[in-house]
Image (cartoon, rainbow, N blue to C red; front, side, top):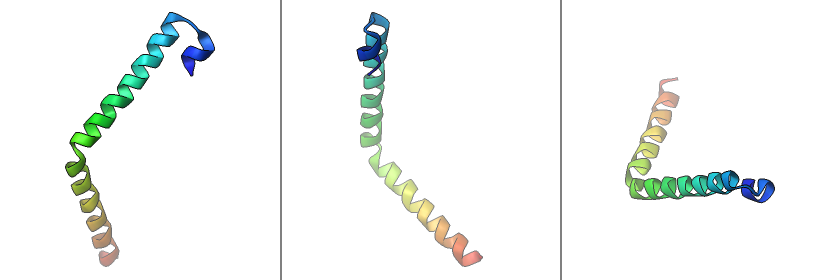
Amino acid sequence: MLAGLLKSEIAVNASIRIVNTFIEMRKFISSNRQMFERLTNMEYKILEHDKKIR
């Protein structure tokens, strides 16, 4: 969007870097999916324990 508005080389490069960053984030999340699932499960367990303690 930035490149479309500003139409400069800097804006185009910034847009490309932003897209590449999101691609890398998606790759990282995909390759670490199991770890994120385990963390999510642990978070739910902790919340349940907190409810029981209260």
